[in-house]
Length: 261
Length: 318
Image (cartoon, rainbow over all chains, first blue to last red; front, side, top):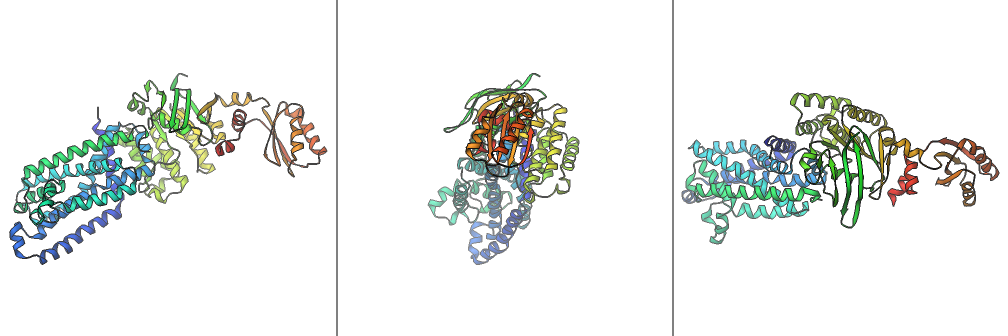
């Protein structure tokens, strides 16, 4: 029997720990603002008006909606680094000795990892919405909840990788490569129509594509969205379920009996 | 006292290394029980099995009625552990660490606030409660680690090396708090390689060496049971020649002689007061001036040396 109280207490710890990374949080916020104010604006000016006609909105709007998803992704994967940090400091042993079950512990970690980045990104997400303007609040709420699930899915994904690879250096390198591929082979930074056909095959099934397209749909810039909202929601639910489940099962398996050592 | 911890044929292997070898032990409710031995004796491994952090290779242990291999979740509800090396994230503050620990152990908000403040004040950390752990000295980190268990007040408190890195005043304060914890109803299992600490705190002690249990009893009985339980320590002005060292061993009622240094002898014997004149006469005759001489009862170090033939330091090196 899982105690929701225990799950929440474990998640709360991850939230509090995240707030201690003040430097990281400030830098990520500056990075986000620089991406919007510099890259987004300048590239928008470089592009011909035909592009705006083709994607149905300005590139700036398109990019602003996409960059928030990459920010959500990159802050959520940080939970994997926390797991290594805890292994280095022996904190895992401490967590395993506490009166919470292994399931409560790993579920709390997944929820904490997703929730903390979602909370962190929320003000920037609202800022982007202000820039774009929301036309349909109900539509936006659906997208908002889906992004919430997306964040949990990414936390599960990061935990799955972290517990599958026992070296923090290897994790760091792998995450760099995964980041390069998963962000660039998605519609976060550019529309699907400009990708070569063979990239599109992958990009269509990328969870970041689902999240970015859904967020754009929620923000009312539907013309830039090529994935149907229903498929995007389904894709995110599938991503969330798969990696939350995998993260919990692998994490639990690795933790039990000293397997993390 | 009925046993609240039962360790039954416990073995833990890490690859080819046998860290704990068929250990059997019972710890009574309300006891302060000392688990002694040099580093590498297997003490911490036993504690990690009891807290269900690692699984035994063979055998098991019971925490109250709960088998740690079958009901680990239930076993953990009775246990709290303070680790040898503080298990703290360096970005955290003592306030956050202790407040969260109290919360996860089920303390109400009011009780939490009260106990966290109390322990931080008692351990001299109140002024530093909002500083991050990375600014702390080793001793301060250790105090935060110990504080966890003192606010939790679990049914069974497991404390690994409670006072390493802590200054003398701090040690006495923590010893008193451990005693108070027992008086409030906790059973204390204390792992240490500081034998003096175990001697003054423990109702019973078990001595481990190379994963095995050597002996288990109350400290007084263990000391009384050493043949040649009295000790005369002789500090010499110069190193003793090998031949003279062998001759000391032959003095009547001398059971054993250890040279911790070539100019420092520990002579184990019976009726020390009667043999002392012979010993002083021997050194006068052999023209080895005595710097000082003292008589003492055996310590747990001597008990360890009696059972292993090694001092704690030698055992750690081996």
